[in-house]
Length: 224
Image (cartoon, rainbow, N blue to C red; front, side):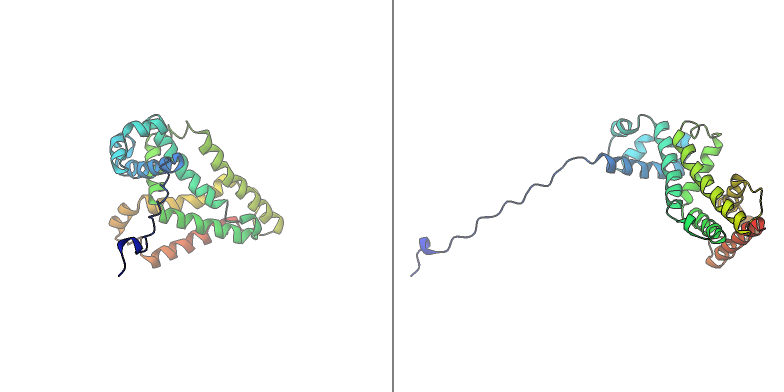
């Protein structure tokens, strides 16, 4: 008969290491920015409330002010983030590695798709225009990051002229405006255009038609 003292001892429970609860400032800032985008898009700058942003991420207004200082500074950093997203993605298109015509087509297609998929960007830019670019003026970063697209376009146009496929005298800013104007307008005015002309702009076949149309329009404007 086996006695209690002869029974094998159960292995001692191994204590699991406690997870670190250190704060991640970058993650916290990113969470605040993402919810701030939602609030500013829905309410505009004037109607946006910091406490509403705090409620969404279960934090305090004090924490948001700790990271951003004020609602206005938070709005400026939202602008910087949204402009930075499009410019950073453009920098990964490897346009310098493409032939001039292919580079322009790739840039136009990207701009069209980005605006179509990022309605928040279009909305925030529209809001900032209501404020006469008051907050863009406060950010040297926005001006600097947007100059990169003009530098890229300038190089593509130069190569196109040398290859004989683009005409001379083209201004990079004019080309940028031509590309972005249609891509932006069909998103910013999608509701009024859709209602007035009874057109379903989100329809995939219509989007593809417009995508090809702006590509061809830009390339014909540039051609030698």
